[in-house]
Image (cartoon, rainbow, N blue to C red; front, top):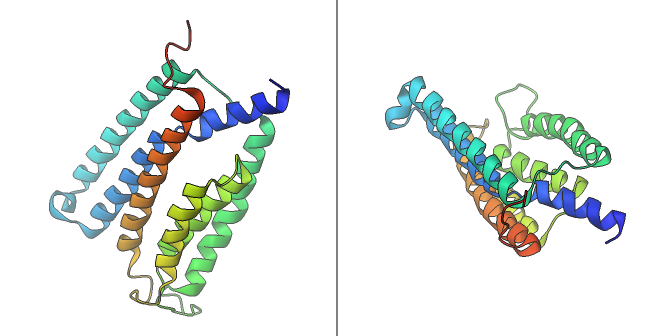
Length: 194
């Protein structure tokens, strides 16, 4: 195996640990429930408890992935590319979403779901900057992007919770497909320390 193949495999091992996407998607949905104060989430303690449960789930997943697939650390180049995508892309998308639909006086106030648009663009940018965008990323996040661009949403950014729900569901689907890709690439794993 050549050095570039090993580097790509290490990056994919860390990037396609997709069950973290399931936890992240649940966190977005939990945020939507907390924002809307739905049912037990009218009490902030319910949201905090949900975050703690998801944090424990992420810790368990990290242990699972490390024991099954080994601990991997992407290269410094990989980290820099992801940092640039996040630190340049995220503010651009954030301010762009405020321009498109918000309560700001300078907003165009278009009937778009800027949360859905932003999440789709961020996920596609990070994927493109790191290990590459796969077909399922284009389908899942492209669908989220198109749904956010449909001119059917409440104005002034009031459809944010719906956007969080949609982004959460997209992240869960993408995470499950990423995990499936990891298992196909590296097998079902085993004792990484054997």
